[in-house]
Image (cartoon, rainbow, N blue to C red; front, side, top):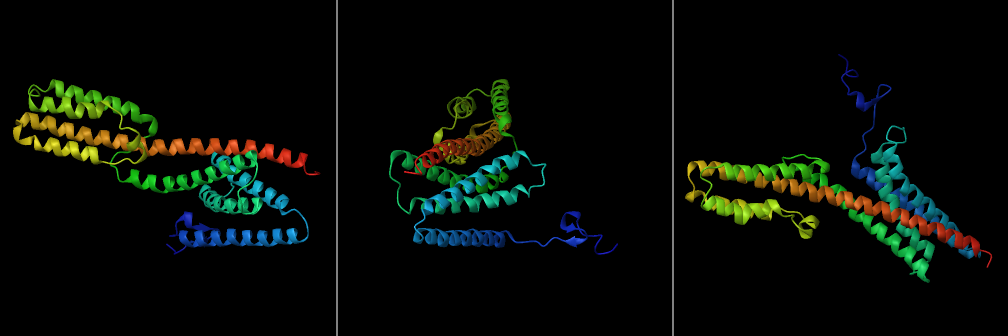
Length: 289
């Protein structure tokens, strides 16, 4: 077998190996390209200003074009079958175009907070959307790492049903145990039953953690000296169920944050476009004045 035939098909095009560019190198390269484009635009806008031409006209249309490109990422994800560069390339371009658009906004308004209620609302929504993008970038980077640490893989749509079935299983295990009366039954009623029966709350949804699970497991282990052999088996099942419920809650919090962020980000994007359209109409209407 030749060296060429041993190459992975994913690493060759027409018999040639694809040059692999390190992620950090691509990130620096894209940042340099975006920064260079902004520098050239700044020079051009300064030239227009010196020529007694309104630079806001040019910067506004450039900013609008960049926002249109940023919006196109959503359409690109829906058209994954088309050969329009990999989605990962679009995401990287989206990130760099996103921070560049903030600089473009500053160039457009002249590096000061705009006057007028409408212009201020438009700028505030734009900056809120940019902040949402930064938050979403952190979420999309950290969430997969957080979920990869869990032994449980589950889709968001399945979480509620799996939690319900787990709650029923725990209730059935405790009731069917002939020796579940006494200490273990009291522990279930006071600790594990409320844990399975209640939601974790807003603070857990914002910053999910395993402190509650560890506390319950510690308290359950302290009961071991008071349990019979059969009760210890029930206690082990309770501990496993607590861990599984904690994993399901963690999945729901992490995946739910991603879904809520994406919904809010898209909603703000289209709200911004509505204001942009009104802004363009007003600019054209009063351009002569």
